[in-house]
Length: 377
Image (cartoon, rainbow, N blue to C red; front, top):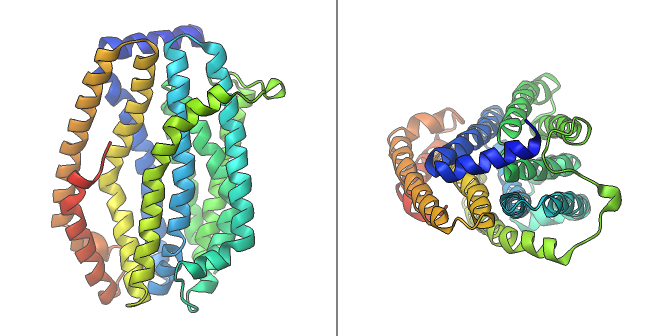
């Protein structure tokens, strides 16, 4: 079966059974993001063995990474929705064009952010409240992370392109592969090579590079995707750019607000101690466990709503939106209750410092009571 026929068959299955199709898209996304979250948790496990200040050094970098994630995943959602709509309306030319625009946008974002990070990263960390005792490790962590930033951004856009086609399998496999590499490299760089905190950044950068190379090979050499990239003939289109941005910017804002929130909290908490900042960081990583189903369902809805809109199936849009939101609230409520009950056990896995444990347990317990009502699909 040709790629075009596969896409048409997938669209028809979405129309015939939207609830089942949502899970067929969401589960691989949740699994892929779960693998990435596992990496994040294992990363924090190893860093936690270095002490509270090591955790705090990473914590001061988190608002920056959330900002980068916001732009990448937000604009990536715009790419996913745009490609899905064009495929849904059988407009292959514009689907290809949207994919080409996403590559250009990814290069622009990664180039600008990498340059700013390497030139002004230390000043940014100081502005965010990073204390003199933590700043050297925090800056080294950020500097090395900037080397791999472009690989992570481009891979995020590659995932968005495939998501627009309804292909979640390859991104999930590559996310898992990257995480396995990360988990293997973390202890090697942090402890065996004695790099400390910066070793975690090197492990992430190398893993991102490997995933980027495989994505590039699959999309540009093996021609795995339905959309085709004709970069030599690329011509900017105001219509395509607007189509991506009108979905991408609002989607980015939730992450950017989270980044600003973390920045503000870090500045407030550092007035008490770096241990408070470390505790907040641990709580944030645990928070992602409950947040995963919402992210997966939201990503699946982006693809399905885009395809239904392109195919003029407006009743299906209403149904799948209600269905997705209700399931997200149910799952999040159950996850929040479980984490509330076992918060002390989970927190103790990441740090043995009793002061940090006490703060983190309180943060996790009270935050997860509100998660079902303060997260939106």
